[in-house]
Length: 177
Image 1 (tube, rainbow, N blue to C red):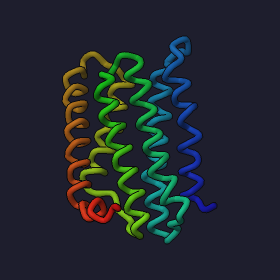
Image 2 (image 1 turned 90 degrees about the horizontal axis):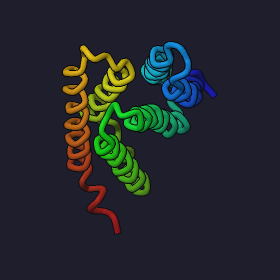
Image 3 (image 1 turned 30 degrees about the vertical axis):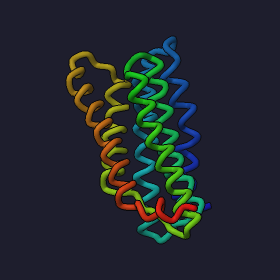
């Protein structure tokens, strides 16, 4: 259990704490506390990846759990925010559907002995989604136009990254029996 893996576990532990503050309107400044926790959790993702690569601490646990922790963090935030009426549910469903499709695709690749790395478009999508979650948590009326633009950018990148991923790895589907 190295430091990057501990950071990944910490990120997963932070998810229910983040959701508690986001969804508890009776707590003073709950959105700002939730925002701070979300940002901290997002930063652990950057940090654990950097440490793992720099010090050659990449493990099978990390390869599996790191992307899972990222998906859980972002998807749980988006589901909660949709429930709060801050984002349309259909957008959240589209984003989560993309994650299920890619996860299924990765499982097919693993069965064929292939490891599919994250793409530029997938990483950009994730970063835009993180910015979107932050904007939605802040819920500042004066930023509604920026929030709306980032929301649509997240949807466009969700679709683009899915199509890019499927196209670049189409041989995986051709090998399925």
